[in-house]
Length: 543
Image (cartoon, rainbow, N blue to C red; front, side, top):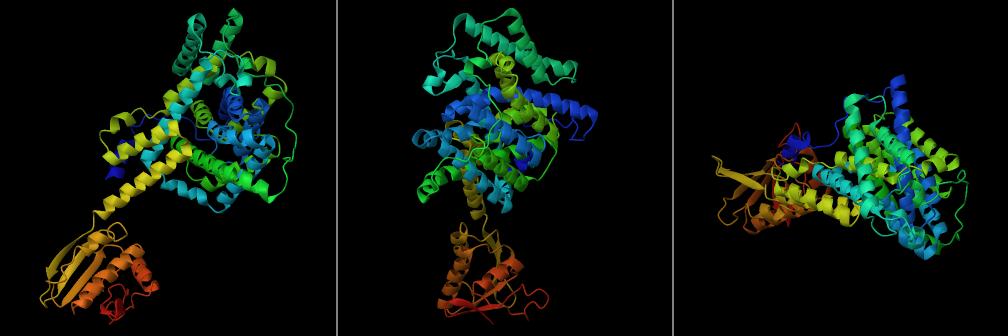
């Protein structure tokens, strides 16, 4: 019922509907759109990469190199054209303790191991398990991530100063803006958002986010407005990333240090990437690619670790910018990475002039487009458990991290599903002309319903022959086998005969493999599914 209701209202969820755009066909118009979209994404990547580098406690170029290499490799080999990957806050917060305790070289080694683990997950096709994430968890994921993106932008309203000394860069240093500087910042953010909102109503020749950045930057530069700019966070000037083997001792002790971090980073990176893969797939009408994305993310992080990058994963904010701007092919992601590299090598003085307000305005529009606004309304229309999961995943994503939120949401959903199925077990009973009593069991028999199954039978008052018909049920696990044995033992103790009938093929194989049952093929010569059993010495035996 929960899935039916969610499916009914899923189409009304306020996530971007981009079906009007091309679906990735390589035409001259699509190439132009992808080029401009890639430029827009590259501009948005700069402050994010710098900020997350400060969060992790490393040099800004470590974050920028990661954004370039991870973005380039995943754009070429990833499972979903249109997705954007780079340095992310979800990974940066895990890296803080590692860098503080052991230094940046151990971080590079960890990123290499993280990538290898992700490649292994892709080779083993573990990405397919992302399909077990329920729709309420997905809604909580996008809502929580939208809030996280929004909160990250608020820190840009601080006065840049003593940022690097505080170890938090532009996202944590200095006091909050006030007075005229705050009003100017807010006005510029509003201007950027207005351009992004209005331009698509007039033309789609230029991506709206790029136009918003260009208009706001031009106004600030022309008028010489005193407002925080990208260069106030840190200089992004640097050279081409050089090959560098992590300078750590190749010992068991090193592995003990980096392995726990690598496992956590690999899990968080894959979860965020695969959820973003699904989200972008829903928006662009694409399917599959989970295992390919795992391998691409792993390859990207392995290479990044050898070139002085902090690693990364898919970025929902930048992916939304790209898809909203019309980016559909791998060209957009490749161009975004190459533009970012060109900023580092050649255009850093120009990029550092861009006002942060323009990039904040772009990200605010991403927040508006990402948050599933109608999920607030369907909270009162879907089952209470699903509404609780949506809120729970949203809250945990904001206050903990994405990986924990998804795991918690899946566990709660699974327990709710198990409980609902446990309550479904029941039986209709009747007496045959021969005097045997038939129990027609309905509902799955598994660990959650085994106790309810035992309560269906009235051993003392039942006749000498009892038939349990499983035509409308399934025997799922060992707890179900034990429940059948327990019922059989009670009838045996009472000196009565028990028969099992209409076991499905898989149920019958499960029981036979466990050594509990022997097939009586005469009972059902065509399918060997309806089986007649006697109770012997505490187990079910053939008759």
